[in-house]
Length: 192
Image (cartoon, rainbow, N blue to C red; front, side, top):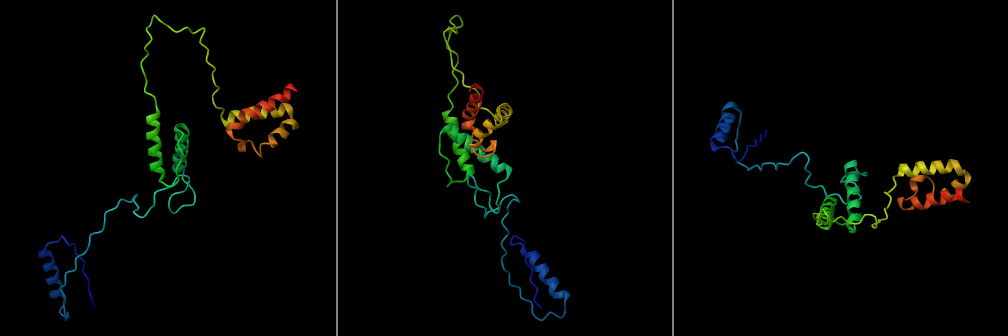
């Protein structure tokens, strides 16, 4: 019979001697006792969340061991897309998503103009009557677009369906950049 005892390498020699003497004295049938001390390496301490072999996630891909992205990963990718559009930077797919996000946030911070205090004295106000600024309408949400298209579709029937079919199947397939074009074509049906 072979008995192997592993002890912490930081244990005292006295503890080791007590264990060995207890073993040799407790069993009279022990023929040979080998007291070779083999150092045992302490296991590396890792946190449960930390996986040392896990590769960092790349933009647009799922994390290691999964086929689909989590909601957190999708939100991170959306944030990368938004920041990339704001900073006009290309999205790199050869670096980890976390690093790409950090780089984009840094670039966005550099591109943000510093707020300057109003230098205009209070008695000198700009002439607001002569100053006209063409306001751009806010970007239309998919829900607003869908509501307007449904209303125009009820009004114009098959003619509206024919126009919508040119843009693919389903309103969700129409890109946001084409919303104004589609709506203007549908509204032109009423003018014709």
